Image (tube, rainbow, N blue to C red):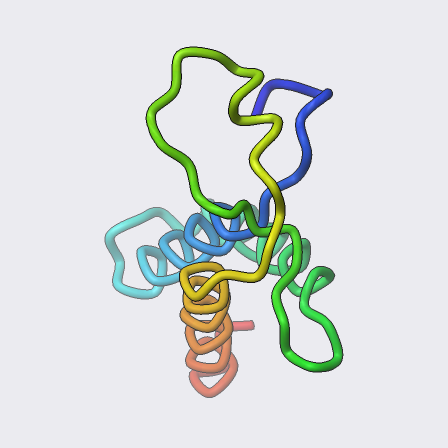
Length: 101
C-alpha cells in the first residue's frame, strides 16, 4: 500500500470496502468510515468489465521474504477476487435498498 512502484490490487480493496460498509451498517464502525468505503467501492467498480469480470486481482500470494516477490505476482481473474467484489456489490445493494447511499 505504501509502494508507488507496486501495481494496484483489487481483491483486497473489495474486501476492505465490504468490511467497512458492513461494519458501518451494523453499527460496529463509526459513520466516518462511510466515505472511505464508498471511495474504495468506486475504485473497485472501475475494474469490473462489461462481462462482469473483475480485473487487477493478484493470482495469489504466499508469505515471502522480499517485496520483489509481491510486485511480480501476476494479475489474473480468480474466484476469490470475483467473490470479494460480489460481496461488496451486494452490500452496496443493501445500502441502496435501505436508503443509506
